[in-house]
Length: 313
Image 1 (cartoon, rainbow, N blue to C red):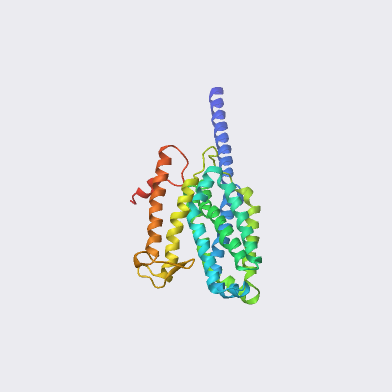
Image 2: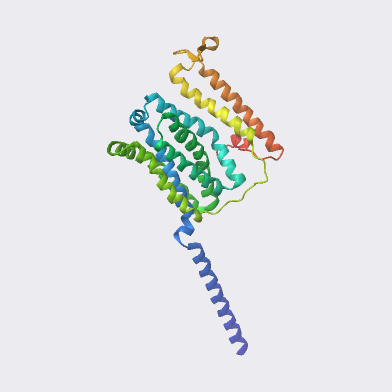
C-alpha cells in the first residue's frame, strides 16, 4: 500500500509539474502585445510613412513648383532623381543589413528619412528640395524598405509570418490611396510643406518603439561589396534613365535631338534611348558575373546569381 501510495503521489507530482511548465510556456508564448507584434508595429508605421510620401508628391506638383519658383518640369525632375537613386541601391541596403545588423541599418534609415523630410518641407529652392527629398530620402528608403521585410522574416514564422506579411502589404497599399487625399487636403487648407513635415512625427513614434525590435545576426567581419554597389547603380540606373528619356526622345527614331553641352548626340541617326538601355543591360550582365566570382571566393555579395535560375513550381 505504501509503495502504491508513493507511486501515486510521484505520478501526481509529475503531472502537476508538467502542467505548470506547460502553462509557463504558453504564457511566455502569449506575452504582451508589443512583445509579440512590436516589430510589426514599427515596420508598418515606417512603411506607411514611406509609401504615403511617394504617393503625395505627384498630386502637389503645381503648388510645389509655384512655391519653389520653378516649373512643373523641375518637380518632375526631382521625382525622376528619386527613382534613379532609390531603385539601384535597394540591393545595397539589404546587404548592409546582413553585414551590420538589420535593426541598426533600419534605425539609420528612419533618421535619414526624417532629416530628408524636414529638409524637403523647409526647402527654399528646388535644389535644396532635390537634396532633401530626392537624394537623402531616396537613400533612406533603400535602407528601410528591404530591411522591413528582412525584420519580419527573422522575427515571425508560421501563421504569424503570414499575418505579418499580410499586414505589411495592406498598410503599404492603403498608404498609396491615402497619400493623394491627404496631400490634396493639406495643400488646399494649409501648405504642401505640412504634409511632408508631418512624416517626421510618424517616424518619431516608430523610433521610440525600436526597443521592441530584436537585432539580427551580423557578418561585420565580411568586406562590403563596393564593386557590386557601383555596378548595380550604373546598370539599374541606366535602365531607369532609358525609360525616362524614351517619352521625350523616342524609343528608336529620335523625336527631338538629344543635346549635351551644345553637341547633338544621335548615334547612327537613332535615338539615344536604345544605347542607354544597351549600356544598362551590359553592365547588368557584368554585375551578375561579378557577384558570381565573389561568391565562388566566399566573399560577401549583394545577391546570389542563383536566384535568377530558381524555377517556379
